[in-house]
Amino acid sequence: MTEVEWKGIVWKAAYDRLSIKELLTILKGFGPMEILAFEKPSCFRGELSVSLSEKQTREVTLYHLEVLGPKRQGQGRAALEHLRKIFGGGLYVEDPGIIRVKNADQNSLPFWVKMYNEGLIDALDAEGCSLQPHVGDGEAKPTVADAAGKAI
Image (cartoon, rainbow, N blue to C red; front, side, top):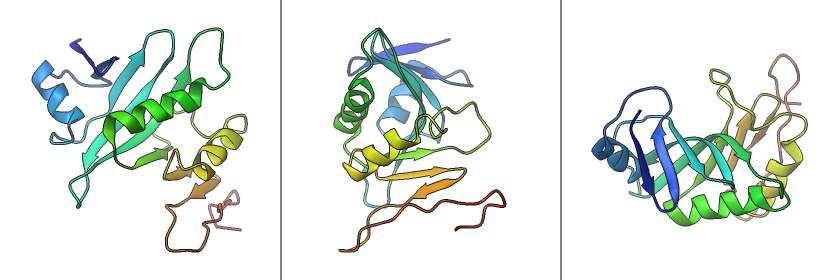
């Protein structure tokens, strides 16, 4: 499988075969919507997709993030800061329920809510919890869904 090191992270297609040129085009936000696997050795790894918004800025949807190594304190925050610095656009966390995702389970949900409140992620969409982008002066509140998926 083709891999490319870009901005200190090793990138590859998560499910398809892509050339180096295709990988770099996707990372810049101009290619087709593909899920990419990434790893910063001994720090973190995960899966994301990159798209170009209507305002021509890159938007990242993060499907999986796992910190690596013996020191875990602050590694998740550092990973999110690094990804925001690389892409410079919105960072959305999503659990589409169709791929192996470890983003918003009972153990990690407080982390994601804290990262949302600190502005490191722009939205969280997962089964049982939804945090949408801040709109206007009102502060966004988490929406927790019941088992049937209805907001409560």
